[in-house]
Image 1 (cartoon, rainbow, N blue to C red):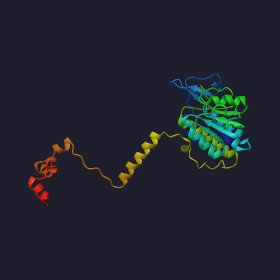
Image 2 (image 1 turned 90 degrees about the vertical axis):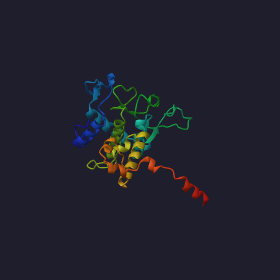
Image 3 (image 1 turned 120 degrees about the vertical axis):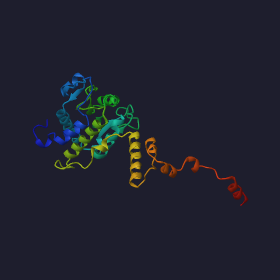
Image 4 (image 1 turned 135 degrees about the vertical axis):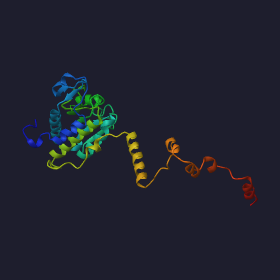
Length: 270
């Protein structure tokens, strides 16, 4: 598909990103409709996706999105945690509508509900968890783009983007690449200049990970401010001390010794 134009070919930098995000590592199960996207199986039994075909499908999906005149007529859907941050960023950068979280049944078919939508194109991040949206799109005759694993449900999907849908980095990077290609096809950003938006913005981050980073920042700030913890004597340190050294060390009984009764009586008399 993109072999005719060198400017649309997969470059080394994008290929390195895709490998680092484990886009090519999929499930041990592979449906017959996804066999054409599989390169081979690794020794552990996982199917390896041909990344050249993934890149071609990203370009194909970007062309379909650009063909929609009104960007708001494109709706991206995702209910899993690893896709919600990426789809919200995708909607923000491309102007598409988004449904993050649980998909309400009847959104595409029941005109009475307040959530009723009539998109001209939908993007699904996982066909397993978002199957209700996929089925309703078939009822309404809405073209569908879907991120599909080797074991994914691909019925009613018009454009399959083969990738690892269980990895946070994989889903986020696919949506980042798709958003970048959409903006390039629209002429908003040139192809000879890197996009100033980092892929990290599309990656889901768990609350525990954020809390761990905040604690690390506080420790670094204390260290930079000159905070030095008090020294702790170990058994090895005390074994090398002489008699004079022991005399200079305050014993706990000296530090916490109570005041004499005479001094207490004087203080009471005052």
